[in-house]
Image (cartoon, rainbow, N blue to C red; front, side, top):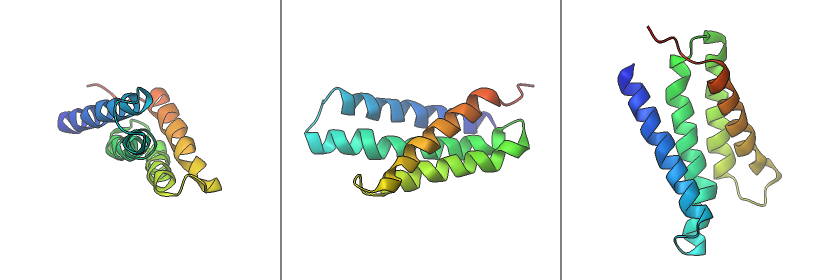
Length: 106
């Protein structure tokens, strides 16, 4: 379980670095767009996927898997698609679940 938390932490930090790099325009506009609107959501989705089995309330496990799926699917869709908002819904849902349902630390 400790290894899962380490991997999840690394993914979350990498996602924040991608988001920050995109917002600060550290690279070309195309790279910034990919970092902050694609790779960020892929990394967050992977983080939610790893976190799901560690949730203390098993009723939320499948909801966290759904949040991870929404992040990845939404990021894979073209920006012009009205369904690209799925990535934001997945992000907000996953964050809400992770804050309200922390794993037991025994």
